[in-house]
Image: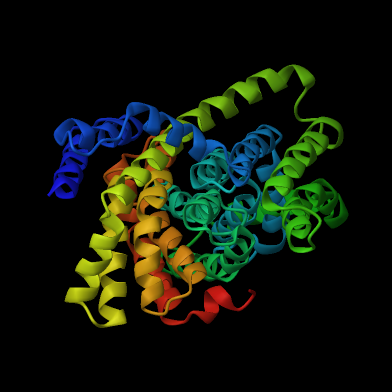
Length: 429
């Protein structure tokens, strides 16, 4: 009864638009206030909050955030886009495909979907509009492709999933590679179909191609080489055993500073203060949510919510297929109304044991969970990517969502394939 009351109160707080961090904190102390026999002190909750963020793997998140901000300020996304445009622009849908591939590579730098949308969108949107592409289509494509930032490694949600469940972060990173490539391929296929159907301004595009090729292949490659090497260095350090994911995140910060300060010279020493402030503003709200979510998860454990949820599902559903469908629907709904970080920290410890009891590898479920929540980035009412893309182009959020609907269907198809064929996620492990 107490557990049900707590969960209903949590939903009510969310419906009242109470900030998620504050809602989690309120819910953490609520059981003691509702039922005096549930004797959990405020000191226990505070210790849980501080203990939860006292985590070595968690250090990777602020480091990847800082690295992403440095590279965004350093113009890394522009150099990636130029390299891919050089090879793809002359083909049908070449520029939209270059945007998707740039999101794929930039996601392997930032580990964040909103950061990918902001960095790639602010750079590529003026180019797409200049070349005559429809503004709504371009905005929707960038919003959806930005979701690759949390699927392709290194991914901040994968770090959080590993922290919440004990799963190997390195294995989760490996498991995200093929799903990320699959989604990118589907989005590129849709871009080709759209451009075939609606046409392109070949004359303007050819002018852009000629402008790029006038610089020469080696000049473009020279400018983009260090940007292209970023994911190679980060992931190479992890998978060769040179560094853990957290250590690789620190390496990525130093690498970002090196190429931005001394190779590209796109930022100066005086810019570092603003970069650090932006990184702190980005990470601090996440840190508070993380701390509150850890305390909340401890309270849920004491209330035996994971066991009750597991019993409820296993007693009413005997088919692994039915349970998988149910959990996917739940995650899609959660992704529409809740940010990825608290969703993972709250639900992963509850749902992972349930799926494991039906024989699913926790690594595969981690990928399924992150892909579900990535779809939430482009679905109203929360849809963070939609809001960021809307700020870039001033296209209304619901207009972007409507235009992105065919691409969201493709994301759902990718999700079905990832669920049906574990090899997509687990081949590299």
